[in-house]
Image (cartoon, rainbow, N blue to C red; front, side, top):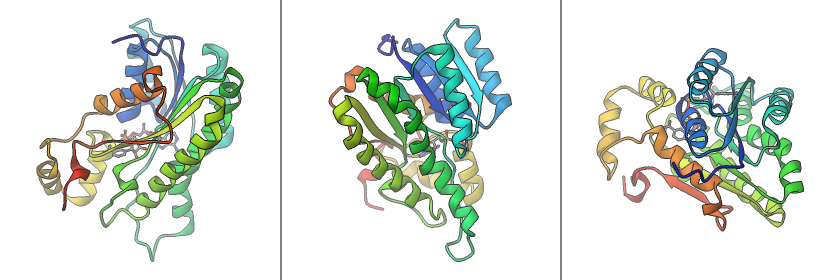
Length: 255
Ligand SMILES: NC(=O)c1ccc[n+]([C@@H]2O[C@H](COP(=O)([O-])OP(=O)(O)OC[C@H]3O[C@@H](n4cnc5c(N)ncnc54)[C@H](O)[C@@H]3O)[C@@H](O)[C@H]2O)c1
């Protein structure tokens, strides 16, 4: 811990478990006040209990990032308790295993609502205060699927590529206000979502995946959280519009 997020209020979506929870814990350890939202009330409350015993300042609000009303409500409560948001991590996301022919429009809209639109909805609520303060950092958790993908995950790659495009667009719009916007693209990371992925595709794929990594292992949520903390902090003061890849070298090799 370096205290490099002291004086920051970081708002994390999907913060109850997996990568989001690791980001919540890392930001608190770096001295930030942290608010987080999640669909999963029980796990969010359990994380709050763990945090409570450390004396760190955190706020949890149940919310669905597909809903602009939920985002506005949770954001307002967070600002009331912890002051204006200076860092936003758009982490909430979902996988998709649809077939391009049989997928319904409602299913398509849900993927894009969670994995892409929510990042804009959350940026929209935090940007006015960041602009007024002339500082802020937004980190969008994308995926290596933004630059490469595999069959059977339609249309996850399209949504995550869109998120990286949104990152570039927002970086241009927010840059003159001294607000940085970056994407962080994890590769295979040991979370409940990855469990779901291997359950969907067969556990044998875990061994294949590990062998494909130059580091011969899958990443831990804390390793993604370390990168997020860097991008949120002043140490990344000249980094904006970037897509930071944390994949254990997976995307450096031929298939
Ligand atoms: N785990 C990986 O291997 C991996 C790889 C690349 C990218 N990612 C991305 O990282 C992010 C986090 O993934 P994870 O593996 O920790 O996932 P996870 O499923 O383990 O955790 C995601 C959290 O987001 C919450 N959430 C989902 N939909 C929500 C909604 N509509 N509103 C509010 N909260 C919602 C869930 O309840 C959960 O607590 C996602 O955007 C995912 O696409 C993960």
